[in-house]
Image 1 (cartoon, rainbow, N blue to C red):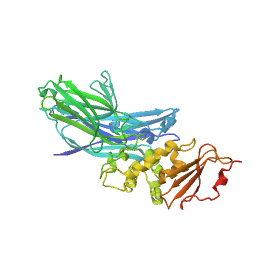
Image 2: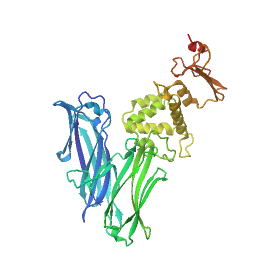
Image 3: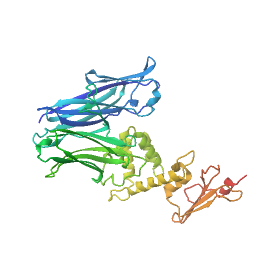
Length: 445
């Protein structure tokens, strides 16, 4: 079988006047195959990038940019207020090709015209096998950020079969994209004689457990049909999932399916203990779906168990991929029981982070950044807490006892400001602050 290639070249010219340090350009892509004509398949390549990663130049009172694509397609960007670029702004587009069944390699390249060093490239193989002519079969699944029914609009590049389908090439859903939309096409539906068929849309986690299951019964009316729908993923915990869509014959239960992997990031929910199976890689972990900002925040929250060398090494890392691997390795190395699919150490650590954030948050700091929060995260639940809130001539203070550490230790926290911001005054732990005269710090004047 011959192998062909085609390249999609994007020369991105977006320059921001006075822009602060921007994230590096990063491309995301997805691909879906559909039935074309008698000899060809119709293939769509979806891509996206964050426009805040590009340079902008000031022109005629606005901040203008321009994207030059292969065959000199131009996509203008223009903003009057660059403050809008403080948050991620994703540009999404699609290329469509009629291709004969064969093996292809796709090259997707993007480069900023005004900042040549800011570039990204992707290369991936595509095996376009011919679709069967006699049996029911499905196209690939297209994961989308939105699907809206609309009248025919040939000028809209996202229009197909009475729908505007805006793809989500990142395949990332959750906090900022709580609904997963899907589009696919079913062919040769009349090849079976039964009057009805069932459809089944399933979301499974990384170990194959079904977490969402939608089923419908349909009547065979046309030889082909568009299958569209939506799945709410705002209740799913961070991790890697698979969306699969099946058509099941109502008589003989024969089944055809199409599936695609996607990512969920919901930081407000506890970590799913099943989404990182034994032997998994960073691409099959929650880190595959995390942004660089989110990775930096998690590493900052992990500082109570990070070694000095690890902190120094992380500070030198450049790019989201390097940081994803670093965080994956960081917690994998601390997994005390690798025979289980659960990283109990990490699970307990972030359980403590969540608890102190809810209990010890002040008006100025998150709970994990307070002294009581730090002690709780490092040493766990105290065996006993003495609370002294109403003693004469003494500001409120607490004494925490840990009986199993170093033969028994104490931590004493005082509310010196009167705003419930308890700071560590004294501890008998050999590695903590020591001040035998701690009472003088909380004497009322």
